[in-house]
Length: 281
Ligand code: GUN
Image (cartoon, rainbow, N blue to C red; front, side, top):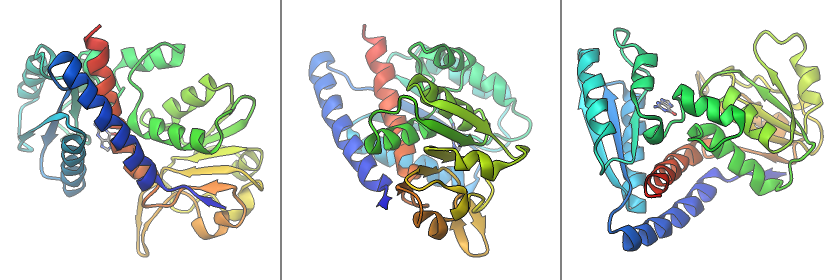
């Protein structure tokens, strides 16, 4: 079984991006900039944002974090986004989720100009991705896609099962696999016979948020299994895939942690650079 090393893949991607940033700097005399807005003091969000900033600096991006207290007014955030939309030194804007209840998430997402939407959450980018046009692609599914392509460069005709239908992961993942000519089945917590669906799959992407849902006897021999789950349990952090069981069957499997997670942040840097490049044309 191939243990898919997301840490190594992310480090390789960051090294490529570092070179690309250096080339862009010599060509344009400026570097791509990422601005992250962090509202409140949720610990996981703070850790994510710190890691994002560290990685952005490592590849040579200009990086800025704007912090607001939990009590900040929605208007203040929307005005800041407008300011960043027209700031030429800002290539990408990310508002860390989740947001406090009094702030309308969709309003915030739609306030970001699509050309700087490094999350790929704006309806314009969602639509462009589903139509097969150029767009920002949500970072986690993009990371999964790059890991799958490393194992199997030609996905044409493969059967893929995506477990989970979120806007963040399942739906964009489906679009990426469709673009590669996979036959894709989207399943979720209400699917009648999830095991039978998974048993058909050459590729399984589990992004449903249920600890160790995908069992060993759900997986065809030689399937590629990507685990997006990060679930806190009494036994520590586990994915949506039962690692020990599935590792006996699968051709390749991502661990949790150390699989998809590191790729997500590297893909955010890639998206920032891609936004910059599109803005220079
Ligand atoms: N919170 C957890 N994951 C994400 C993500 O991919 N983007 C944003 N903006 N917030 C998140």
